[in-house]
Length: 163
Image (cartoon, rainbow, N blue to C red; front, side, top):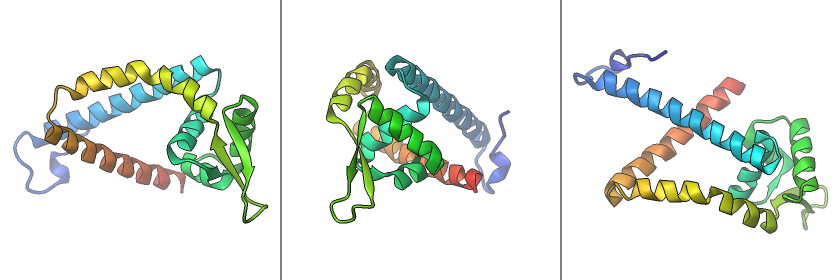
């Protein structure tokens, strides 16, 4: 279902609604393709999609407590315990006690795991680099700003859905 957004904003230009509707559809398609890529990658690695996404959070964000990982992923603390157990058993993550508060435990990605997984993204990096080459640095900067803002908007909407 595509919604015409031309009436959602006063003072819109002629044709603007069609472009916005097409962009919303393209973003949904890109999101779906990303989910399917993540599922394929998780299958290749012999893990669940949730485990892979949590590992990805650990790789990009660094050390996190179980509570922080639960909040960032949207999973319950009970589910996160299972994720961490599986990641640790598979050698992808390690639990480490906080040096200042022994009750706190941080979860860190193992460097060996990062080194194993990174090459699997190699062809995607090559494909994206070829796509980037079609655009100027100014155009890419605009796309980057849009992606960051769209990601934040998506996070906010996800938070609303969870409330």
